[in-house]
Image (cartoon, rainbow, N blue to C red; front, side, top):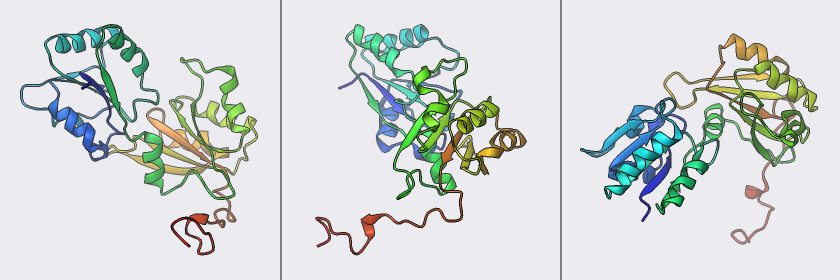
Length: 253
């Protein structure tokens, strides 16, 4: 059994925490959560006597020391991250430290903001005969991005995109997507603090992305859903074959 579980808390709505994640939080002796992005309601189910700590002000070394203190005492740890731990979750370095000390750990997936945003907007990333590919990425900022993954190069594929951690430079996002060949009329969904009480979702066109983001004061905690082909009047006419009466498969003879 893993002594440390990295748990995806979802985008903010406490009800989007998985059943497994909620159970493990309720069983842990230490609940360590990223309070800058994970609401306290998510960890409110910690058991009586458990230590609940906010890691927002801590360094990697400090969080590791706190975790090891509990592990050495024979306890279990729920390390709670926003969204899904596998996406911009910084779990790799944390797990490496634990593995170096022989501490078993596991990961419980969560709902990432990109999927919560699509749900809130009632949109689908994949559309028959339009795009069957989704790219998760970000604009280069303080954190560098490999040149081969520059936003304009990814945009050249014409597929759906979900852009994280880039709301501080909406002009840069717009410029790079247009430089990649996307049409200015491409539908863009901007989702601010999706899953939180002050959630706001705005639809715009790529040519107005920066203006719309500034008008809405979306300068942080915003994901951009880039949905080629869905903003035009003729988009969405193709239907999935899954429920087509003429499409035969093993469950429909």
